[in-house]
Image (cartoon, rainbow, N blue to C red):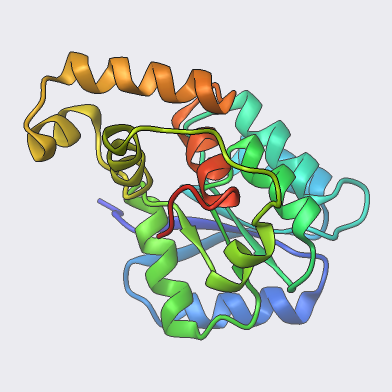
Length: 207
């Protein structure tokens, strides 16, 4: 049985794809199953290869990374897309995160941290480089959430389920879900990943 994490790399620069493939080849639990040179290829290969996670560049020909992310996650909300970007592409990063990407890392993230972040993303945790998180902060005041709602949102960002959150906070699962519905309404979010992305962008929470 192959328990390796299957990775699709989407980047229009061959040297980047080769470098990432070399890094992951040294990890016994990681396997690169495909490479895409543009966003159109990324969408197609996700359908064909069913990877566990896509490492998505943002500035690619034919279809940019944010649009490809939105298309992939619209068709398969359970898929995971992790953005790899250069510093300063905040608008495109924001669009990708709002579409449901599980995080965003700058391309010069050290190899060990990149591998650790990928594994954390697979476990359901949202991973965002501190530089990107700072760059995404907005001037507008974020929506007001209660201390309990903020605590729940932080645990959602860590990948915990409603049952696990209920146990940790010593409240019922129905109470957690009721809080989540209120959080979604306040943030204008339709999913957990979107709520976390908005909360990180507006600095309601930090990870």
